[in-house]
Amino acid sequence: MKKVFHILFSLILLVSLQSALKAQQAIDQNSQLVDKVVAVIGGKIILQSEVNERVQEYLNDKVGDTNNIHCKVIEDLMYEKLLLIEAEKDTTITVTDAQVAQEFDKRMNYYITQLGSKEAFEKWYGKSVEQYKEELKPDVRDLLMAQQMRSKVVDNLTVSPEDVRKYYESIPKDSIPGINAQEEIAQITKMPTLTVEEKQIAKAKCEELRERVVKGEDMAPLAILYSADPGSAPKGGVYMNVRKKEFDPEFERVAFSLKDSEVSQVFETQFGFHFIQLIHRHGELVDLRHILIIPNVSDGDMEKCRDQLDTIEKLIKKDSISFSDAAARYSDDKLTKYNGGVITNPQTGTSKWDMSQLGELELSYTINMNPGDISDPEIYSTPDAKKGYRIVLLKNRTKPHKANLKDDYQEIQTAAMSRKQLKIIGDWINRKLKEGVYVHIDKDYQTCKFQNHWLSTGNYQQ
Image (cartoon, rainbow, N blue to C red):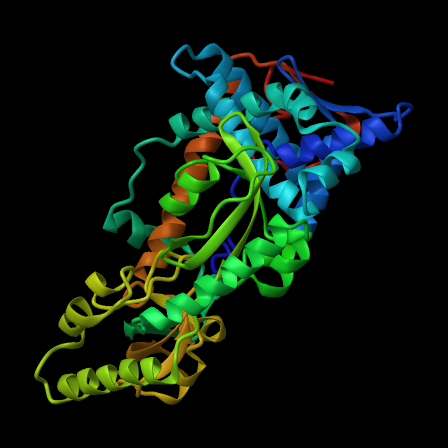
């Protein structure tokens, strides 16, 4: 809804480990770096480098309106520091070492993935991951404490239908946002059943590649050339900081049974045939390479899927069964079959898709359909690159329009909740400031038009 309701300012960002890493890198690379304290909240300071780093993140991610971005950023940072101050006073807020380690590993996995390997990360930053973990542990702990405090501030908030109506009516008529044309789509899918022969061919290919690795061939280029896993193949088959309960159970069983540099036997999962080479195990995490070979599906198998869907389509059109019931009975897609086949938009949590998003769903052809139409069987790809067929029902299409309660209630409800949260947060900030939290803001930022009363409390210091 941030893209739709521009009258809302961006939700407050919490402490970024990425900022801490980059700031630390800058200090490491130039020990003579001169920084400046631009604000103090309680005993917490905010440096100009923190402000500059956060501004760059906003600009890179194109988060919200970038007018007066430095003022917005310093207010975000002051809010974060205030959350941390209050969290340190609250005896109900605790953060364990295990939580810190989990958060650090989750974020570090992202950064290492971007750089390609743990070795590349350590070369880039000039320190081992373990050294960074120890140095940044306080920053991660602060992040988690601030998150818990914010959750307490906005906990148990709800918006009633009356709240939604009042929110909508409070928007000036000339500021009601426009909504692009949207579609609601449902699907029934059929995936081919693999034959024994097709599986044997894939397994044999996987065995051949494993043998080449065991004999000393570098696994990385083989993964790039042959692996069917889109998540790791471009990186030479690498997954870093894998923890249990993130991957297929059989994949994890094999990965966590290996010793450093050991190559597994070929094994099968729901995705196909794999083998793994363990790079390194550190605590409850493993770094690994793997190759996935997916069995090729024959044209005959695909035609069977098409014929099955063709029959189902005819039954629906004859009113012998509803689309929703047919999805529950016949569809192979577990995510949609018990939801009437409706495809949910993960960005909004609703069933509505902007017309510009149809390409990523391989559903551009629905533009030529009318509401209530059912498509002929069409080939499509699952997120894990498997091929199948599906039929699609265009449930509804809305024309471009001004947002209204009848057609856009869920979106308006989300915006109403955001505004309510922001008001609660603002009231909380101003209440805490009146309680006597020390505030100092550098003269360069005293002309900012802040959302909250940082400059007008009796405890503010020039």
